[in-house]
Structure formats: C-alpha cells, structure tokens
Image (cartoon, rainbow, N blue to C red; front, side, top):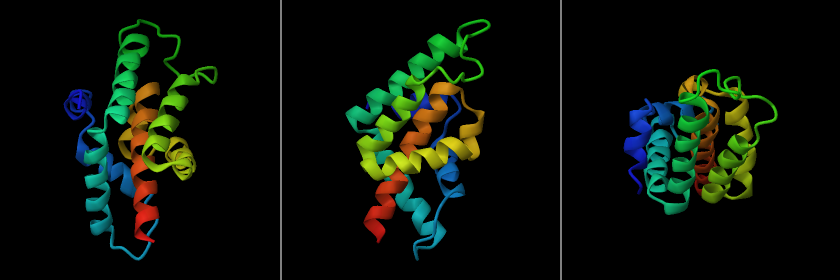
Length: 144
C-alpha cells in the first residue's frame, strides 16, 4: 500500500534490516529465534500493507524529508526534546498494530535503537520502531 516497502527501501531501510533490528531485542518465548524472525517478518509485510500503518509511515517519510533531510541546518537535526510528533507517530503505529501493550514495546526499541534504528533520522527511527514494536508485541501475544 502506498508503495511503502519501496519508499522505505529507497531510504535504505530494507525488510531484512528491520527484521534484524527486531531480533536484537527478541525475548525468547520457547520459540527458536529463526522461527520467530520469520513470523515477525510476515507480520511486518502484512502491516506494511495496512492502509493506516502505511499512511503513518508515509507521513514519517515525508516529514523526515521536509523537516530533516531537505533543510540545511535543520532545527530538528539532533532530535530535540521539544519534538514530540515523531514519538506520537511511532506510538500510533505500534498501537495500531499491537494495541496498548505495543506502546511499552515501542519504548524498548525507541530507547535502545537496535540495528538500523540508530542510523535513521528523527521521524523514521520512531516510525520503524513503532512498526517493529507493534509486530513483536502482536507476535508475543499470539505465541503465548
């Protein structure tokens, strides 16, 4: 939907890197890591095609371009504490996919910034963290 997977790929955010980032904070639940990674991958692909998740991700992509990438000396280059909309987008994506529990999972990924998350700008790191958190939270809820 909205070519989100392709748009993320153009930003250097491939599906493999997203899954790898998810697995860096994987909490084993009696399911082997390889099996968990495949299940999480399937969830990520599914939710990339959800119109609500896709539109929030598109919003993050466009905001990152407009306010961060395309501005010389951007006011948000260092992800200042007064910038909250990036966090709100990330939490909205997480909760859209995984409900209230996913908000807490989002906090783990937002604070630790595993894998590709540490390389992204202020909007995309939170949006992708929200995608991961929603999918991992849903995975944990379904596997137990």
